Image (tube, rainbow over all chains, first blue to last red):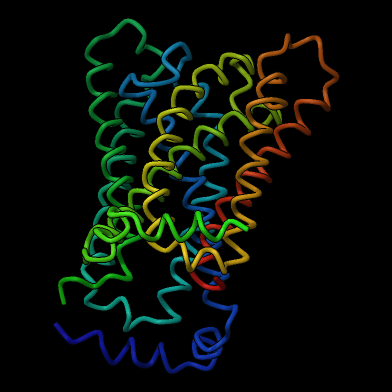
Length: 166
Length: 158
């Protein structure tokens, strides 16, 4: 596989990435927006996960709540992704071979697959959950997996500045 | 005025243990932002409901009561992971204007959430003018996001 380093060096050398990297406000403000968006996005996802595993909001039906929260989850997920991609472009070689950054990408992919599988298979029948133990078991599993994956994503994100395993 | 207290925090055995360890401080930082995420999630779901944009099928009181336990446990976790970060770097934070702002915002947000927001959330749905819960939710969201954002900015602008 050809090395990604030349591509990242090219990206790092562009005028706009250099300007953002050298500005005292560019990187901090994009990063702070990134964190603010993820906190709200993952926070709302985790609330629904707690509902799925049966730890909170248990007196409320899941499907109608999730339907109302979905636009807000998307309204924070999309800027999270946009600012995340921007942060990477500003300093690509910093993230290259950073184990916590790579872990973050893996957890993002797994959390996405889990959400997709849940949405396509289980969630369609969410209205029937109240009585069916089979669906409840699947929902608990999906909620637990989501809870674990988003938690690991946040923890690994915060550890990126500490590249302990060079 | 508070300098002796900050010096006392700095001198604690726990603070020294944190300074001596490579892993303790970063892991505590990571768990802090995780706890913050859960806490903010429980705040935002209630604020969206107050704003009339969230789960309107549930009553405001029902959402608030469910969120209360999450707020309590996540809040304790935020505190447990926040305090050692503070004591370890107490002398740095003593000079940090952003840290002072964060603490004032935090005090305001806690007080507001325990009083005004709580009252409005559990009030009878018909007893309030329709703009009241909306304004209360918007103020809560603004306060808590300011706490979060000022916390993040400490890293950059001290």
